[in-house]
Length: 118
Image (tube, rainbow, N blue to C red):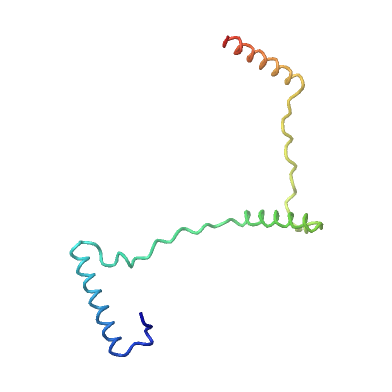
């Protein structure tokens, strides 16, 4: 197949005529089949763009700065109006008495299951 720039004027006219014939035949075929003419040319619907809140961006930025500060071995630069960091609530730990009580209960349960299988 030759390039368009290498075609003569007569060949270009023939190509344009053929293209018009093809388009008219496609239009006629679509009318016969009952399919819409512009169905193929309709653009796809755009997907909704995800928007991140300013607070989320700030959290991500702060976390990235902390990571880089650790890598570089420098102290992170704190903003003047930074929120005070609230210490996390300590997780509830089981007392030794509660552990012993639970252990005894589970041992009794396992013994009963083992006895039931025999």
